[in-house]
Image (cartoon, rainbow, N blue to C red; front, side, top):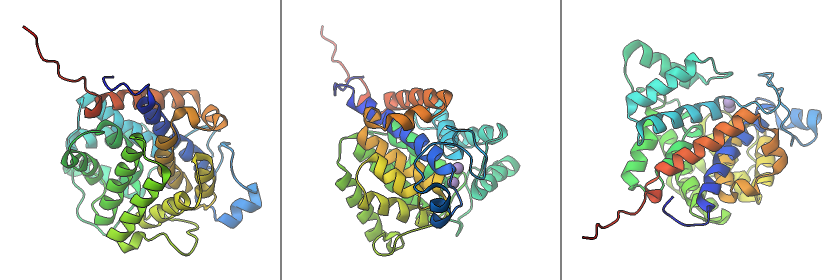
Length: 308
Ligand code: MN
Ligand code: MN
């Protein structure tokens, strides 16, 4: 890597990918439960122990992580921004491999591509969180790229399954949050970015009432994530808070996890949570993070002038 930052950037990239998997694995146990049901069963849920409606084994992850890895593979194959066709093919292969779970909008989008070859979902009122939960490869591989390139990459992958303005702004916002964190911003800067999102689209305002039981609607998802990041400090506290809100807990966990993991880096992740991930998942996350950050324009070797 050309940029000599003592490995901090690579550490943050790994932190983001492992943070996503941790949030997914932790949240999956309580997905679709209410906060009241969670506290009756677990007190505070803070152990990666599997179970949940998917009957996962401890340390197993769901579509949030596996779709992210599938999109990441498309980047590594393309050695740059995968086009719409490459994204659709990656998602199709992912679905053929029988993922443990799959969102309705994602399924519909992939089936549409299979039947019609169209890589763009029609404009829809369906603002699911599936395009946002898998956006991490864009944040990593586009670090240092022109803003238009980053926006194109974020939306071309989204459009295969999602076509809604609220999904778009949320996806761009999460990419931006992760990139700020990778570059060393503090948590307050991330919360300021959340404030910008709310200023841009008032639907996302996360002040006031406690956002419990967030649905898969991206507005609910983002409000819960932003509220947790605004009201709690550090990876462990934010992740514990957000998954204990229940609802689409694996996805709120995954989104909060990638942002907070990019902030703190792999070395500052709670060791018990990193250790609880399945070894194959942990290894896949680490190698994917390394591969993607090496594609980032910020990390290209500086062009050398030939000296005659
Ligand atoms: Mn999931
Ligand atoms: Mn989910």
